[in-house]
Image 1 (spheres, helix red, strand yellow):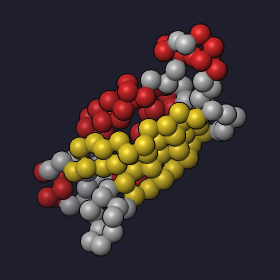
Image 2 (cartoon, rainbow, N blue to C red; image 1 turned 60 degrees about the vertical axis):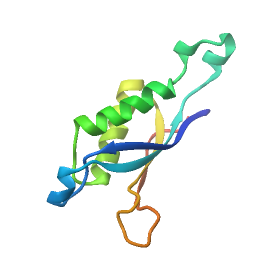
Image 3 (tube, rainbow, N blue to C red; image 1 turned 180 degrees about the horizontal axis):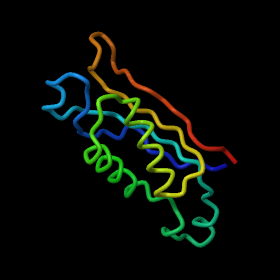
Amino acid sequence: MDKVYIQGLKIQTTIGFFEWEKQIKQTLVIDLVMGWSIQPAASNDELDKTLDYAEISVAIEKFANENPVDLIETLAERLAQYLMSQYHIPWLKLKVGKPGAVHNAKTVGVEIERGQQQ
């Protein structure tokens, strides 16, 4: 299985359990690896047969801002489901980090895998 990835995507969104967090935007850092055959796109140099990572990057931030949640766990699960259904991705690995959330830690977060690698 080939893989298409987006690494270090920084988005601004409202996320957090505490009331003060619901009033501000915070930075999340997204790493996404998507299982996808690149052969159809590569054989004739056709953009419409790719996973358009620019479009997906915009969709990630839009999804996060239109679907606010308290937990990054919830965001990761819902975002994975959305991406897989919207873009017909058979497998993905998604990492969502929240830098600065814990004193003395560069970042904290979750990493999930969904679907089947082929």
